[in-house]
Length: 343
Image 1: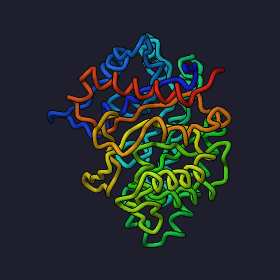
Image 2 (image 1 turned 30 degrees about the horizontal axis):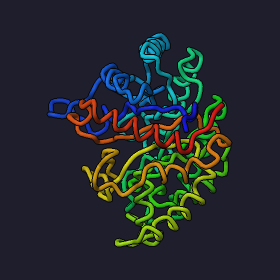
Image 3 (image 1 turned 180 degrees about the horizontal axis):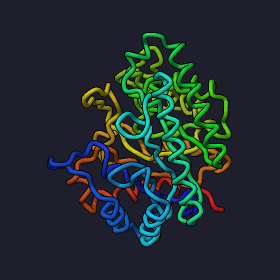
């Protein structure tokens, strides 16, 4: 059954994340990512919009209001709306660790302020009418966190509370994306501890990603919180999946459709982190449509108006292949047909 909601968005950051100038996988420009997204079509259905990364080379977070409006015009020229925004909270962008010292956390909060400024421009332009601002702890790996878990989680909670107050003052909501490489957010239980510690569900919630949350089940980087063991049965999988989603779904205000083949990988100082794979990957561990339903139950009541595909770390050749995007769009249409709603 077809539905009008949630709207179907594509992420722009796969053109940036893991890309390096001067290599065979350089960054892909915003305009070209928009072109690739606009070209996708399945049975007359196209993407409705995009989710957007607020850093170079797509966006200078200190760009003038007029320059941000020009970006809004460019996006709107493809008949796209903007949904969720990714704040540049990491070291090397604007921000720094949310569990760091005062100087580091000040940088983290500055990134939130800059994201809220750009969000306001997009909102007033009219290209953005829904969506959240995505954050994480910006602390790569869990070894530092493990030196004093209680103290370090408390520090993250305090920083997130300050960030949520900034967002609330701008009429925005923050969504913390659970992923096993982010300290204090590296397991479903640790993520829940942070959300409950902040205790501001109207302003700070959870961004669920199918690929990343699959690894929560397996306890990578937090074996004590594993809900499954290798060789699990289908019944064991869905029992564990229900336990995890029942805990995190009430906090979930943003949702990424994705696929995971069970691999983890590290890059540089990154610890193990989830590896997105194509929607039709033969090794995919997830029934995308069925698993999405666990997160999208009562989604409208939590203010969710769109869902987004995340293909972070896809090779450029895969991103340039039109079949990639049609396959993704087809998977998202199936999710909406099964679990969507109407205005």
